[in-house]
Length: 108
Image (cartoon, rainbow, N blue to C red; front, side, top):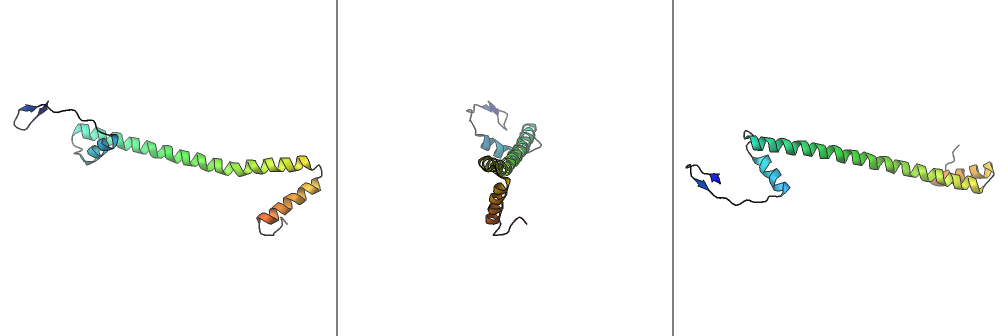
């Protein structure tokens, strides 16, 4: 039941709202009313929490992306060194790789 301005009451059907609809109602409502003030605070806190989570996920993905070439490089070096027992051959292959990577410049 909803109380009307004239003091009478009217039966109102329940309406199911989406989360986004609740957010829009809360953000556009009068913050001096306690339920709307609570809803605005609730959505502000959840929004900040989500921002922090997304930032942390982006940092983890960035760190994983930086580790991946390093791990691949170590694995490649291990395979090359394992196949060639001669350190000079290993150094020569690494030098050729650096030249290819850096436009013909050697490590010297």
